[in-house]
Image (cartoon, rainbow, N blue to C red; front, side, top):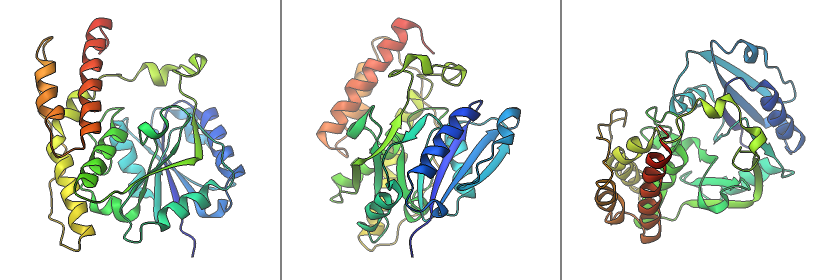
Length: 290
């Protein structure tokens, strides 16, 4: 039996983009009857409450405004699929039969533990921008989409877990270059910029990402135990993080300790995180971006 695919779609004030995305899903699916989209919508986003699309199954979940992590977690709670994909409303699917390719990717991992991701024509292989996770992986992770993340870092968080898993001897990162989920991001197309982008704090999740390092280490231990046939240990939900803001000169030694000298990670990934996080800090200070 072919597996049902659940698309987890938080959206706000973008009903036209949602329709464009769902149209691309339906038009390029080999089996649209085996696709469902779960939309998480704010209760004050009245226009989006009337979104209707009949060619695939669509579930609307309406509630108070949340963090991006919480939106995805809520979508996951309402999903029925054995394969889940966290998506955005600013995507256009370009690959015919993309759903069958996703099922083929899933079939490569009989135990269900993997992090897959498509080619978004923006970050490409560098980041799992729209993570593909099996239901089994979601069950094993204490919190696949940590609610503490306001609007960023969910993809980086997951990728960090799976790089740690690779360091333990299990390479379960699967980049599918031939599955194209075009990310129509404003940094590629400036005219796409809108209030949904502007309302989001671009650097508001940096401290949370730093603070969840130990949680990611425990998540990788849990996945490793399952793959090797051991009983995974229960771990607490990483919901509370206390990390003090870094000063102008403190960020470099902090990121060196937290990333560059984190021997639980491959050299390439920890070097990337060190440079990237330091650069983000100085850019946000220079431009005075919160």
